[in-house]
Length: 466
Length: 79
Image 1 (cartoon, helix red, strand yellow):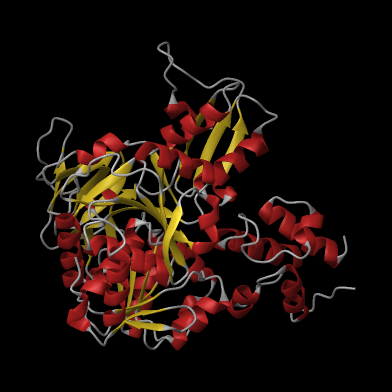
Image 2 (cartoon, helix red, strand yellow; image 1 turned 30 degrees about the vertical axis):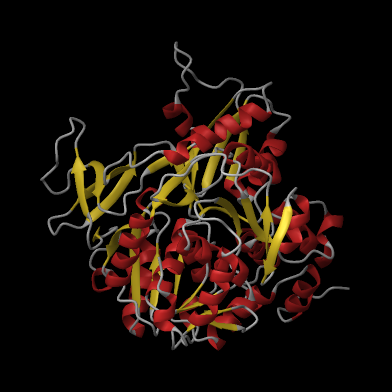
């Protein structure tokens, strides 16, 4: 995947303690780790923005080992479910968590340990399968996106091209490595021979900003909520002479906020790049060129190099008239193979043939710039994480079979209606714990009865007004 | 309500916890106090005392005790 030795002495990684790792050192560490693992094994990588986690990921991708990427803080019950569904050969996890799992420690480096499980090659892996990623928020569904080597290479080179990344870039992490957007920042910077500043600190902590300044970060990425936090922190008053580029993805940013950051970028000679993507398209499908950030406020931009975007009406016909809403369709080499919901699916080949129905409803203007107007599927973006409403309902109903429930709402604010008024707080804590999203995103309300039609289907349109 | 009570109440509101649990709390010690929760806490403190926290103070507010030191700068006194 990466020719690390092309950049030998260049710094690949700076950790939050200021420790540096050259590309040659990363190459050596990844070879050492991979030497313990037979090719085409499945490994669960419990990710954090640390050197150990990164070495695991790079080792696996570069040596034909397939990682399934999860957050290191994943709910233990969910993780055990995933282990039963996929039965990986190994776990790569923070050393202090290793004792929570059965298995034998094969080796340890940089705070991470490789744990050999008793399962061996339980499920055969499709030869092109490179990586398994969640579709974002975890509602307990064992559904993962199957990404191929070709997918990752295609998307990486496209992003490097349109962001004009080179080896002088120094990106600081603001997003988790197991999240498609965070991972694409790592993929692209390693491909460009650039430096990645790894930190677990959030931008709400002084440590983050001290590291940002000291290590002369040139770029960061953020979801809409990140930009709301930056606004609250009066980001515009900060002196950040080394900063070149701010990227935004993971949902639609509020137009006012888009304008503020685009104006700041123009004033300070920086770039603000709004982007659009999904894990199903590896990471990115569209971007709004920085020089159009102000003129095309609210737009998700144009297709990335190598991809095409089209709109389809409800009869399946391609839309050619501007300002007509249709479902957004993407074509390109970064369209992933499909999903896996269980171990047996890992042998499956390409089910999409390079075409992705995004599930987003969009229109384009006379200049060909696209605008998202709504969604076909029932999900919300909560702090940048896609959370499926039906899956959340199932999660609640499975755990609480004694009352009915229905989920609706808007981005960053899910409404959960339940028919037991004594369980409001409990359900809120339960969903926050399972999804690992802040509890304030979930508003649980009592309804005597969930509105349904004669066939028993929930009438969500009625819930939207409540 | 005393300032101490008002201050503790801001934590209770932001993180849905009892006042006893607020004392000695530090950033990320509980799930609710993540970066999203931090925004909520800042809003609660600002509302409780009718002030606007400076960005430097927002990123320095990493524990219950530290917050009290910070509020002294805004003439909020604790007995």
